[in-house]
Image (cartoon, rainbow, N blue to C red):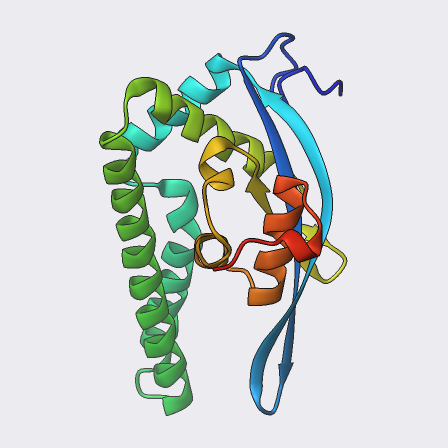
Length: 199
């Protein structure tokens, strides 16, 4: 698809254009716990049209019960209920597994509902144009690949807002390791390592 076309519907002359920097994260689990290894990928660009952004904004503002994101936890909860019912008068292992599944389903559901509420509140304080731009970025970043082999992929938008961030801010906002935050700052500002801004 051409870069000036909407990444979702293919409409030409899309209103929101984004430049971004790819972040690759590999999660390594060993006896000491979980470690992260990060690297920066390519920069890229793309577009989202206003109609697709408005559709996403409407979903965020109106979705008080996000069925799609809750479905896995509802299924886990129902499996837990089934295991508990099946385990009555039988092996206690079924009761334990059922109770664990029920707890997982309830906690996961509450987490998703809370996240949806927080997101609605964040968007509610923005002007309509700013909210549309945020929704457009969410649409755009969600359409980009999430995995490259074993690496998780996330993306940093190269906007006035991110350009105003310091190294430490980038690290916190985009969950970067310190060294990667410094490299990311250099790349999005187009400067050499020795010119890097202090935290």
